[in-house]
Image (cartoon, rainbow, N blue to C red; front, side, top):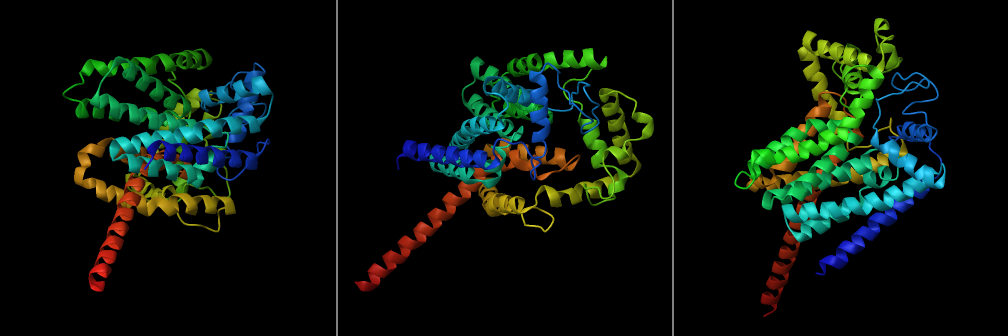
Length: 420
């Protein structure tokens, strides 16, 4: 097997499929299924180019007033869009094509490296091949959303972390901090996993890694977040590390209006749930107050909260088609997670025999899933977990293929003996 040729072919497939998705989504930014947020990121980018900070021209989700700077949305992704628009004008298609051609092959390459390091070169190639045709990734990597770069940053951080355990080096520690900082600036939820990653590094590399070593990536992360923290303090006159969205999400996701079952509202809007007495607060104050109210919902009825978290698993791990979903959502869901979930589970089963070697991906799957089941669980929030599970799907495919091949060889051998 020519490993390099196979990898190049896979990277080409990843690029071509993303190019097709970009052309399908086109040069307009529309409220399409699962990617409605791209309208907000596109609007923020245009406003940045016009010198209007991170703001919107009209009342905007979740509670942004016209022309009032917000810290709710990712700071980093609108900068990417603004940079593209500054060069070519307002052409979202160019941003889609550039993003797809970068992130599609990059994700496949990182999964190849991750699967190769965790298991074998063949598993790495199969993992990359799955990512190249994974419909969710194809669709979202052409959408103007944070997920494509976010997932790539997480995969890159995991590959580096595994390399650091084998051979620590100052440059790798700094690169790890850079990748984790990028991930946090794209979606601050990753910040909650950083302590787990660093503790795992100290445990897995306990014979080579010293406690002071983790200060390097932490310093890089701090320096990357500092400009935005300063901006927020000047804007809101209070400490806000990065984004004002955790309180909104926790309040809305755990409001008693849901009972114990659904995160989806019927007959009302999320904004309507915000208490009248809080609506005069600025964004940072409101986010903090809503988080306090959300924690109060949990304290007042922990049993309801536990059942609500449990029932969120249905939406988070949804792999079947539904009448409520659009055609493209059903095709994406069944043709990606629905198709490969059995392989992911079988691969996890096979890996348990050497569980210590795979503790990092296990930790991420459990912790990251727990974060969203405890707060806001949407299918696209699960995509980083999908990516980390693809090497396990690759392991399953390789194992099953080997079993089929061995069985075929035995049958041929039995047939030859019978002929003799």
